[in-house]
Length: 490
Ligand code: NAD
Image (cartoon, rainbow, N blue to C red; front, side, top):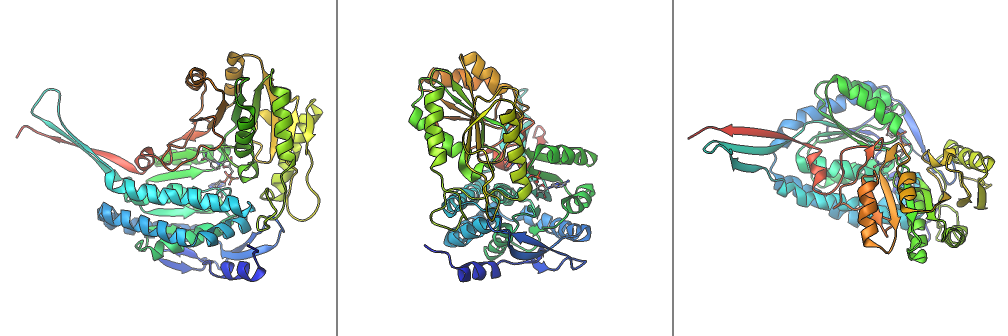
C-alpha cells in the first residue's frame, strides 16, 4: 500500500506533542521544544515539548502521588488495562508501524513486526499480573509460618533507547503496570513519537492519571539527574549503551536504587561445519540485518569453521548484496537508513579501520550517496581477530567474518568480549549445543535461530551487557519487592 504524504501528515498530527504529567499533556515549564527528524530524508517530522529538570520533578511528584492507590488497585484491574491497551495497539498497528518507520527509519514490514513483538509484552504482562504468586510455608523447625508476598517497588524511572521505539517501552511499562508501580518514562530524543502515541493509548485504555508520566527532552541528564537524586524514586530501568548505564549505576548508588540495566552487546554468530548453511545464512541475515544492524542483539562477529567459511561467506554476501536500501515507507525497500549522520560515520570508521588492518570488503563497505543516512550492506572477509570492529558494537549493516578451526577456539573467540548479551550457534549437533551453551558467557543463545526475542523469554545479559531480565516470569520480578511476614506459634 502506498503511503501518501497526507497519510503521514494526518498520523503525525494525531501524536500528542506535550509532556504527559499527571494525566495532562502540557508544555515545558520554560516553553522549550525540540525537533524529531526522518532519518531517510533529514526532514523535521514533529516538534515536541522539551522537559526541563522542573518538569521531570513534576512528573515524579505525579508518580509519587499516584503510587499508594495504584499499589492497592486489584491485579485484575491492572491486568484489564494492559489487555485493553494490547487490543487498542492492535487496532492501531498500522499507525504505530508507520510512526516508527518515519522516526526511526526501519522498513514498514519490520516496523509491523516490532508492533507485534512489542505489544506482546502488554498481553504477556496482563496475564502475569494476576499470577504473581507469593508463598506460605512452615519453618523447618515447625510451628512458625513464613508468609512471602510481592509488593510494587514504587515509582520507577524508565529510560529507553531510540532503536526499538515501541518494544523498549512496552518491555518496561508492561511489567511495571502489572507489578503496580508508577512511572516516569524518558524516551530517546531521536524517536520519542511512538512513546507519545503509546502513552495516549494507555490513557484511553483506562490507566489512571499519574501512573505513567512521559518526559521527552533535549537533555537526558537534566531529566534523569534530579529524578534519580530524589529519594522518592525507587528504581531505574535503563536500556541503552554501556557507558551511560555505568554512569547511571553510579548515580543510583546514592539512593541505593533498584536497577535494571539492558546495555550493549557484541553477539557472536558461530557456524559449525555440520550446520545447514542455507539456514545459517537465513539466520545470519535476520540476526545481522534486523533493524539495519542497529540492535543490541545484532550479530557482530561471524565466527565460521574454516572448512565451510568460503561457502558460507559467498552465500551470505549474495544475500546482503540483494538487499534494497530505501525509505522504509517504500514497498521496494528492504533496508532503511541509519539513525543519524554521526552513526553512519561511526560505522564507516570501523569498516575503514578493518580494511586498513587487512580485511576485504566482499560486498559494500561504503556510505550510500543521496539523502538520508544509508550505508551499503557489507560483508567483510579476512578480518583479523584484533580488529577494532570485532570488539566494538557496530550498530550498522556490516558483517565481519572470521574463522576458527575447533570448538574450543570458537568458544574462546566468542567469549573474548566484555559484552555478554545475545549469541547465536548453528550446528546440527544437539550435544554440541549444550556443551557450547554451557561454556559461553552470554545471557541468551539462539540455537539454529537468528531471532530470539520473545515476550515469554527472559531477555538480558551478563558482563558489561548489564543485569536484570525483561520478559518472561522474570520480568515482573524486576518491579517487585519481596516482603516476608514471620508468623509466630498460634
Ligand atoms: P544511549 O545510551 O545513548 O541512550 C539510551 C537512553 O539513555 C536515551 O533515552 C538517552 O537519551 C538516555 N541518556 C543518554 N545519556 C544519558 C545520561 N547521561 N543520563 C541519563 N540518560 C541518558 O543509547 P542509544 O544510542 O539510544 O541506544 C543504543 C544502545 O542501546 C546500544 O548500545 C544498544 O546495544 C543498547 N540497547 C540495548 C538493549 C538491551 O536490551 N540490552 C536494547 C536496545 C538497545
